[in-house]
Each structure stands twice: as structure tokens, then as C-alpha cells.
Length: 262
Ligand code: MN
Image (cartoon, rainbow, N blue to C red; front, side):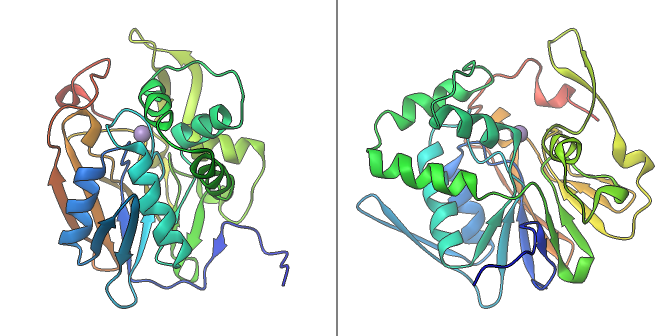
């Protein structure tokens, strides 16, 4: 039955959750992390079967794609889990641009998109169609756990929770950008988390740093796996961190992960 409830409103889901940072095509590390969290990942042929520990739900903070070596497999894992109701994912800026590419838009293949394009060339039209449909289903953010938890790719301001419009979608995808770029060509961002005073915890990714950044009831869990850092999960409500190290540097960013800070 159709419902008028917006896609971000999943307050009825009370977890427990395993919140996973930016995967960026790093399927080896994702499989290892899921294993540490108690999930079973089994491949047979090109298909994957994932079993979840009773009651637990994975929530990806977005940026499943680009940079890493196995973007199609990361998508297979996320889609298989989503179909079983064992995982949710919010839209990330890379997923959003990849979706525009797979829908035929003329986008610039920068920041690791070319790796995804090359990998998708080996996949059949049915898989492309499945991915297109899945990416179109990703909500701009998720409001979970009776309203106590928000997952948004680049974060969210307190007053944006429960609303959605172009400005809010943009904030959730890109953060609090100033419109300027730094000496490396990266967008200049304000650290919105420093002023966050909301009651809902906000878990996000987008800004890679060597360690999880906990600020005012917000957690940035992007520990830069694709740059040779780690892939991190935050278990909720336990507030436990579980990480696996990157197998290698998969993508050379504009500066090393150790020099990346908020
Ligand atoms: Mn990212």
C-alpha cells in the first residue's frame, strides 16, 4: 500500500544498528568487517548471500562506490542486504554522481568515478538496471530509532531533521560548503558539527580522517579505507567501534590521510 511517509522517516526501526562508513568500492574490507560484526557473506557464482545476526541492521553512510577495486561487489552486498531488510543506505555524493552517470548524464569522471565506470563495463545490462533502481531508492538521510538517531552522508543540522528540500539534500550530500575551493581543488567546508546542539545523534561520513571524529553528539565514521586507512563500523546503541585496516592504498587522494583533519 502506498504511504505518504517520506523515505527518510524510519523512526520505527530501533536497531540495534551497525553503522558503516564510506566503503568506496573496498569490498575485501567490507567482507572482513561484516564478518567481525557477525554477518555471514557467501559468494556463489556472481551472487552473494548475506546472513545477519538476529535483529541487527546495517546502515551505510553512503559513498558505496568509486575509488576502490570492487564497486560492483559492494553494490551486490548492499543490494542483497537491502532486499532482505538487513541494510539501509543513505545517498552519498559519489553514489549520486554515479547514479547520474549510469542514467546517461554527461558527468566528469573525476575523484574515482572512472574506476567504477571501468568496473561496470564488465557487468551486464540487467545488473546496470538493478543498480540504477537501487541508487534511485536511496533516501537523502535516515531518521531512526524513535527519532534519536540520524544518519546523513555529510551530516545534517538540527533544524533540518524531519524536513527535506533542495538545500537540505545538498547539505546531506556535501556538508556545509562555502562555494569556495582550497589549494587542492577541494570544496571549503565549515565544520557544522562544532555548532550542533541537537538531541538526536548524527552519524555521518564524507570527510575522511585517520580516526573517528566525535563532536557534540555527532560521529564522523569515515576513516578513509580507500586512501589506505580503515573501514569502520559504529555499533549502535553500544557505541562500540569496530575497524578493519585497508589492504592497501586504493586511491591516491590530493593529500595523505594522515594530513586530513577536520
Ligand atoms: Mn566519501
